[in-house]
Amino acid sequence: MHERSSTADLAAVLRSELNRYPVGARLPSSRALMERHQVSPGTVARAIALLAAEGLVVSRPGAGVFRAAPPRPAPAAGDTSWQEVALSAEAGVPPARSADASGVLRALATPPAEVVDLNGGYLHASLQPEQAMAAALARAGRRPGAWSRPSLEGLPELRAWFARDIGGTVGAAEVLVAAGGQSALTTALRSLAAPGAPVLVESPTYPGLLAVARAAGLRPVPVPVDADGVRPGLLAEAFAATGARVFVCQPLFQNPTGAVLSAARRPEVLRIAREAGAFVVEDDFARRLVHADAPPPAPPLAADDPDGVVVHVRSLTKPTSPNLRVAALTARGPAFERLRAVQAVDSFFVPRPLQDAALELVGAPAWGHHLRTLAGRLQERRRALAGTLQRLRPDVLAPRLPAGGHHLWLRLPEGTDPQETTAAALRAGVAVTPGGAYFTAEPPAPYLRVGYGAAESTEQLVAGAERLAGVLGGTA
Image 1 (cartoon, rainbow, N blue to C red):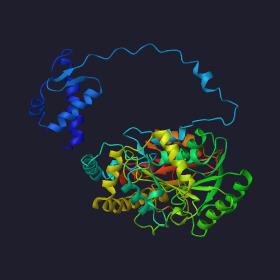
Image 2 (cartoon, rainbow, N blue to C red):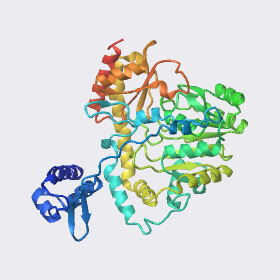
Image 3 (cartoon, rainbow, N blue to C red):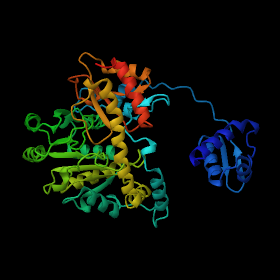
Image 4 (cartoon, rainbow, N blue to C red):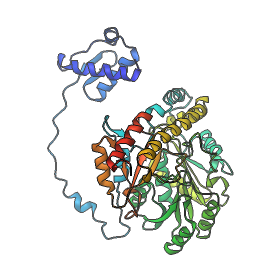
């Protein structure tokens, strides 16, 4: 039996048997539990730890495990109505802050087991390198000084690895280790733009970016994208009209459109930003989500940027696990010192055991094998989802499908309500994301975002696409 399911099963049995013991009574010994349930010492220890975390038992070293006293009843709810005044005290005084996390919370929601998940933004457990990560974490725990405080910038070896991974002229001294891509984006925007300032963003764009910008008191200004990425002419006009000093973009497999910034536009974007005296924050989230049938991707914008125009964000989270929150935040010149200071104030540093585990993972032979396997499986999943939609509702698919990332951007027929469609799809047993949250204002057309990384299998993806097509009315 899988060790994790063994632990859960034993914990469930012990939980159901607790009423046999009075409060304070000693439970059977670990040896007795091992013999009775035919499990390992580790399984017993983890099951007891689960019950202890739930407050059901108390473990006393050298004495045993005892049933805990029942929890005290919850206190009566207090009166928090005063907070309505306190939290709105800034209303009308620029810059007003608003932490609208609706788009982020929707992406992080876990649908019921019977629902096909085309909403999630992380890889299903079957696509994650679980064994390699477990081995890396175990090795990290045995490293000398594993629990000592790391430097504020991050472990030198990990910074050097990120610099090599980004390539070009980027050096280790220009890399700051951050706690995941979302944290890195937060640090970048708070460091580079003053509250109340405009910040240019692609339209549509990742809702987590819009939430970060608004929570920092910034004003997101949309710049439309097409199949070749952000449109340079409109970008130049937006810089001139707003005086913005920051533009945030995803040049590779943009979320949600999947667009790749074309070779002709790459130098144009950097030239326009440089002439505007502005930074380009490059969110390179999909670098390790390239499919097996894709041509080699272009290098990051940061790889050839001696003047420090580009502030680069790269995370290990997307190709591994939502729990491996380790990323690189790269900048040159005074901007790096600003980023370093803001991150130190916010979070001090990324825990060393997590950095060590990341370093162990990317340095192991299993890392390359995982990336090759993931590239093939993402290709299979894209074909399963897109192929079913092509058969049943070809009108909603873009002419050019992305060969990277793990989502598709569907344009619905005019007059369709994405919110109603999303609700109907959920009733039909498939979770999708309405497109409105990806725009800074009203969307120009009805859209849905559907992902193929979080579902359990290609069979589930086919079933989910069929259910969605049924909600949309079958073949157009």
